[in-house]
Length: 194
Image 1 (spheres, rainbow, N blue to C red):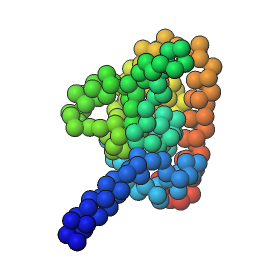
Image 2 (image 1 turned 90 degrees about the horizontal axis):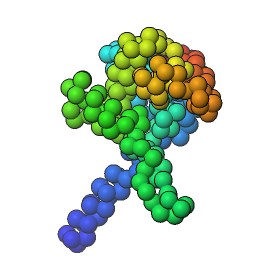
Image 3 (image 1 turned 45 degrees about the vertical axis):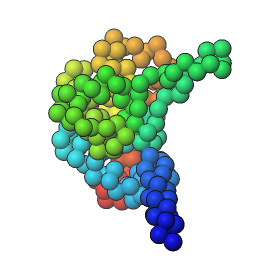
Image 4 (image 1 turned 180 degrees about the vertical axis):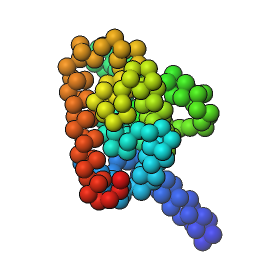
């Protein structure tokens, strides 16, 4: 009986650590539902907003576009000849889909050496840090979700060059990010979360 009990406890602990930690909230179109389901998201975003000045709806819209709120999101694999795996498209990972090099730069500049891309508080802090750099380098206001997203996706130098203009699909995504930020803002105001 003692051995069975130990195995049962281990099984329960392992099951409780399953995929739920990284799964997306159920209703990604309703900011209030996201916050109700995951109150830690609102705490993390408020902290990032206080520290960096990036509005919560802009953070939410960027996370939605990048990872759909999936904490361990990765880019798809690339295949040679359609069947031979050649590795992932990039090193982007986590809620923020930060690349390895940019994440290392963030950790060094902010002193958040233990920061992890699959933790919401670190991901929102990263977005705030990046948006602050975007404001300083490219003059894009924090509330300008469309252009903040374009600079986020293309990098500061790419944004300055206008590399996004050659990517109609990216311009469409940026328009959707801006619309989602406005919708999230209205929703958060209606449920009195802002």
